[in-house]
Image (tube, rainbow, N blue to C red):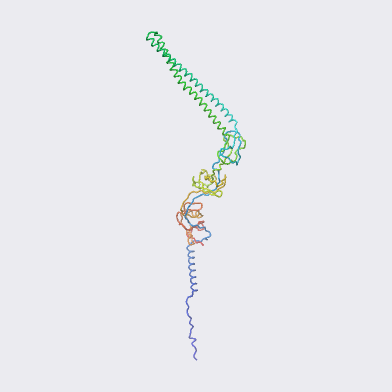
Length: 420
């Protein structure tokens, strides 16, 4: 019996090619392998890793850098004169604290009986000297008239003596008179000439003498008139006037009080001119300079002024400065009003800078970390000027780079740090 050939036959299966699904799985496996390898390589090449949420980042930019100081202070009157008592006496205040006054308006009155008595005495003395001066002028005119009369009489006697001398010359020639009479006529002529000469000299000298006496009396009168004018000025100043237009501050003495010379009475605050008094930390004192621009925030507005004075002393680690502000009628300023200000120390244009942060202190301005492809790379920096908001970068980065501006202590001074 012949068996079948089933034992000799074998089943043949057709071999199929790779499917699309298989290819996709292979691609996923390769991608995961690459990513895994890069992750492992990154973990192996970086020293430490830091969470990105812990860091503060900023972009390097180019622009204007303002070195400034933020300070606070108050508004003070640029002109607040104190009124003083000109003389000793009883004061009567004509205005009250808070009253508005005009320039030249009466604000106080000083009663000084002693000064008024001195003024009356001086007026009497001036009147006496005026009378004496006028009397001296009349006396000088009288004396000059007498001397002029004497001179003229001497000239008449001289003319008569000359006439007699001519007659004697004619008579002696005709032998009508004796020699004694002739000589007598000559002597009379010489005497007349001598008296005329002395009269002329006396009149000339008396003119200068009388003028000197009159001038002396006039100078004495003027001296006393000046004393009278000074006393009158002091009496006029007993009515105390306001030197400026403004508002009356506090009384410095009581009403009807007895005051001494140059004692403070009150303060007048000039409302037309204000200054800002700022307190600046002493660490910035050496950088301050007169004329620096100051931006002042007051009553919701921004005013720009200039630094006008810097105190030479330090009080409580602060330096007091004054800022002169332009008159701004649109801003209502008040004495002792609080303000905030920004003093511009330096202005630089077109500089490379980054926002200020703790990295400047922790890295001493020489070390920074640049963010690139999820890695913080340690780089060397060269910093320049600093402001309250930005730091100038002179070398080490370029515009558009991203830097870590928070504290660098978390990086432990490593060269490369992975961010996750």
